[in-house]
Length: 268
Image (tube, rainbow, N blue to C red; front, side, top):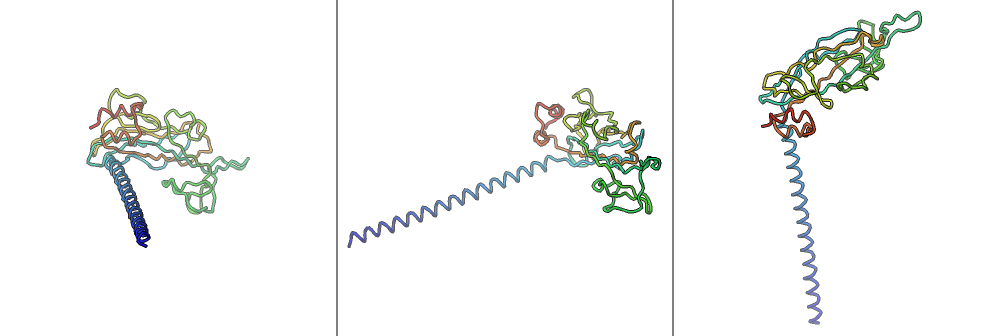
């Protein structure tokens, strides 16, 4: 009987040990998970803070209203970027184009080649200076009971010397950019074009502006009749960055990029 009690006592001790070990294991795993989660949140916060601290507030200036297209017309824009923060910074810009044509009256012997007029509206209404409303099949109010109906809509990221542009209606529209180059060096106040972005050559100080990026929007003489009174919008997407190496990383620049060498000498 004594042996039996001793044996039962050992079993109880063994069970107690297993239970304690299991509790310790669960506790350790819990601590590891909490610690890892905290570390991940901390790193995420650091990344978010780093992005915020590397941004410099900027403002696009110039005429950003919609351009009405017709053959051989020119619209002055004088697009620049101003630093509205309290710190100097780098500036880069990308350009997005949007075009909306309207239905043309081209019926044989009756059509006059002008924009076709409708007397009923198709909601939602097209608004000239609200690109998001530019939709095919919807109407733009010209006057009381006179509407133009949207026809062809095209969008495009503006690229310098883009051969694909020749397959779009944008081929009839040109941007005058007197200060743009594809080479680093040789002066100040220019814009370096590389891979879809325009990088300003100089540090932009608080309350100072860049040189002109887009001076005019021009429709060439051979612009087809189907683009008569078309809406052309140019969205200027400007970014401002602090003068740090982290900013170059955020812009995705490496020593293989021209823009990297443009900015590298300015780093603090």
